Amino acid sequence: MGNTAPRRRIPAFAAGLASLVMASGLAAAPAQAVDKVHYYAALGDSYAAGQGAGPYLDNCFRSDNAYSELADALKTVKVVTNSACTGTKTQDIVETQLGQLNRKTDLVTITAGGNNIGFGDIVGYCLTAVKDPTNPAAAQACDLATANASALIGSGQLTRDVVAMIQSVRAAAPNAKIVVTGYPYLFDPLTSPPTDAMSLFIQHATVLANGLDASIAAAADAADAASDDDPRVQYVDVRAAFTGHGALSAPIDRWINFDPLTPLSPDNLHPNADGYKAYFAALRDKGVYK
Image 1 (cartoon, rainbow, N blue to C red):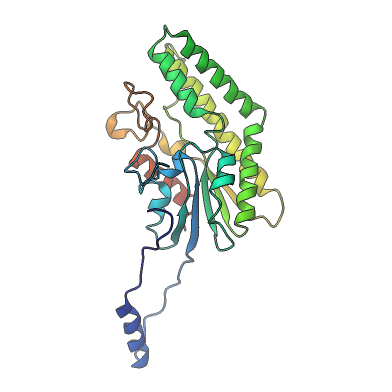
Image 2 (cartoon, helix red, strand yellow; image 1 turned 180 degrees about the vertical axis):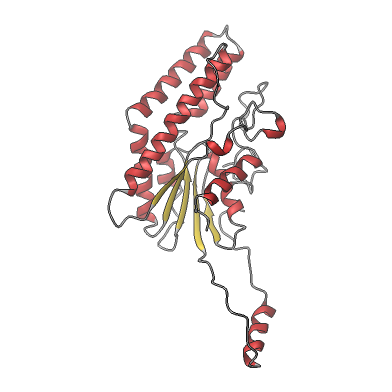
């Protein structure tokens, strides 16, 4: 899907048949309750766009395998726009992704915040350092990127950034339920202390993922409590859903792309198609797509 284009049409003969039944005086079957159709806008970064699952529709790495596109198959959801784009930060979403939101929009999902703390840079620098331990520049870059991310999380700046984004979304779509998602663990958390460079990186990545998700959850709570008449803001955690399916899992179980021979591949450490199905299932299980 691109950004608009309704896909479901009621065949003309169906409407004609209903008229015929009523005109003939035949008793029709009791009507089933019709669920409300949600006018849905998906916003965010590469994890919302569907990067990692391909094939791609544009240079934003939007994919028909994104979790929002899976929701579009439901009768209760009509995707009005998937504006997500790889590389975007929370402020980029405010500046570039709100154009199609309006009073009719009643559901917005957002995955964002990872780029605010430079998670992609951390992965690139740190995996390069792991792969080449004799490269002091990579190790220094990894340490600096990790320290900067930790500072943004620890100071509360990331939470404030996400709150500001949610408030801008609310202003553009005042009747919408707003759902912010977390990020999965890229690697399954260690069950024993790290003993090598890769294990140490996994431990750091786990700590940062916890801080990132906690910041997003705190922002959802803060935005939801801003005033009594705000639409409800919901946070959906996906970490448990991805348990056992991290980047180092067996290929048949892996939901996070990972090729250690090409650590800088753009699809590396993004969900594959099964991973986006897990995102969709987590959102559906929390009542987002109902």
